[in-house]
Amino acid sequence: MANRQKLPRFELQGSSWEESGLFAASDWRYEALVDYLKLSPSYKLVCELARKGSKVTPNNAPKDWNKIVKTFDDFGDVWRIPESRWWNSRGVALFGIKAAKPQTFIAGNSDDSALINSKTAVQSQKTWQDMGKPECLVLAIPTNQTKQMALKQISAIVRANTFVGSKPKLVKPSYELVRSKLREPTVKLGTIALKMHQKGYPLWLIGNQLALSPAHHIELDDEGNPIKDELSLSEKKVRLGILASKLINKAELIAENAARGLFPTDTPCRHAIKFESTTRKAGRPAKTK
Image (cartoon, rainbow, N blue to C red):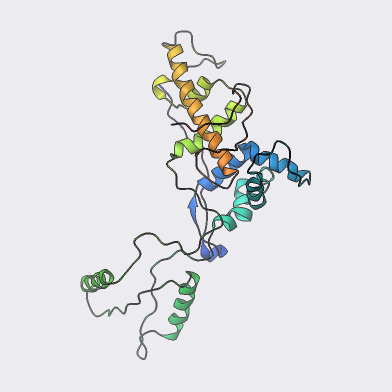
């Protein structure tokens, strides 16, 4: 029976306004981004020159060299710092916003002398400022009524007022994750496939180990070779090789786009540097369908 596809684990990274003064929604793609930067030949070239203290543009530099240098200046030498530490020292400042997540909160409670007592008013003011001072609708809800009555009235008031049609963006961060159609398995498995390809693993073996097609899984012996009575071996190798090749092409584009501050996306990268591999043909990575 074919093995189930097991995705590599990437830790969730994020930041709360209360703890760091920056808000960033938790996401596993921040850690995956660091992996792809390490795989990018463009990013590696900039890093090697930076380590030597050289600011001279090399002869083999891609035409969008300045864009890659800008990304490196912001993201740093990702080879010399663990992903978790990178997030705290670099990532949160690049992807975080200097405002708390917008959320409904209690502005205060009334007492015998005032609608909102001074103590809760001070805290409410701070909470509102932390969120970037958004325009708010402030309600007074008498508690001498049932919850059903209160909810009905609140619902009517909310419907009568104007709210944004989509999720608001209070402050634009320096970098944002790209909204692409890339599936999670593609992004996660792409790092492994690209590493294996660079080490010279056959395409069919990459596809087999990553379980890209369970229906074409090939049983291997203790030495890593197909077992002798494996059925339709040639057909399986071809299918697995095609799937692995497509995944690798996507991963190369993801890595080269990441070096230019765009992640995760496999859009064509005009000035991408070709990846080195003992099995890869020369040429720039092309977008796959």
